[in-house]
Image 1 (cartoon, rainbow, N blue to C red):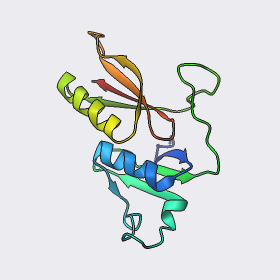
Image 2 (image 1 turned 90 degrees about the horizontal axis):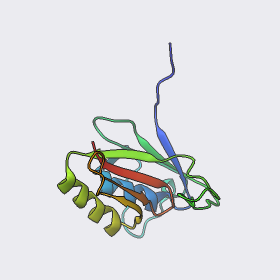
Image 3 (image 1 turned 180 degrees about the vertical axis):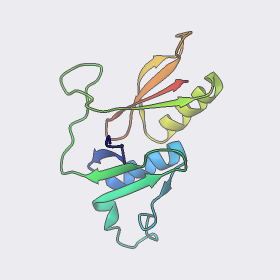
Length: 136
């Protein structure tokens, strides 16, 4: 029997902030117990480990680290090491996803929307992890 992927984990220096970026970008929800506390209350989970889930995929988790050098992709000095490939159904949805990603704090790294076979954008999330959104 082969192992099965249980969770994709991203390192971050700000667990809650990165989880919120992906929660809002993908419309995910927190695993019970990982939701943000009321304003002004301590957030011990937000300084350690958080998990986002959806109904049809692998959970996305966030792990606090002391330091995280930003990937320099497409340059090779600091490789991307991992990136997420995500799809949308059409070019209109791709434009909406681009606007939402940028509004949430992503940085556009590559615009390949003129590719007739596979239009896509590559972003860096707020911690520098590359993220692709393409028409699938």
